[in-house]
Length: 151
Image (cartoon, rainbow, N blue to C red):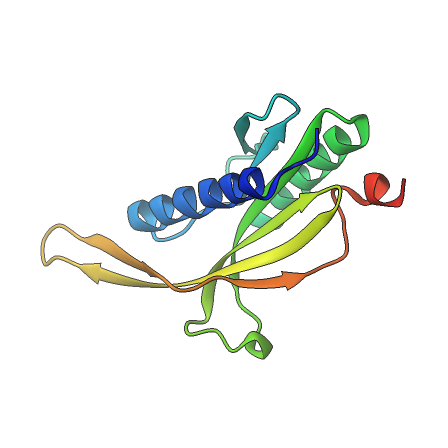
């Protein structure tokens, strides 16, 4: 199965929605992702390396390796890997903070940055209001589907 543009959009939307939810709830998030199975279903993915306070880079690497393994085996059609990042200045983002989603399939590989701003609200009960801006898509070399792209 190849990942249709609609299915890639579904993966991206899942990551944006979950990232916004976590930002609203906690003001931050650790890397997470989702895969598109050969049956066309989107499945959420999180990472845990056994440590109480894992470094975000370790979780990102763990998920990336798992997704690469699944892609190499041919058991997924696409993957999305999300991280909370500072958006490079060269992309002229409207806000410096962003949800970055690595969105990949055999024939598609992009970083999609979604700039955001968090406003803290409430005097006694604090809550976050998250504003998302237009995505910035940047073509990148395949990583997760590198072997599939070279086949």
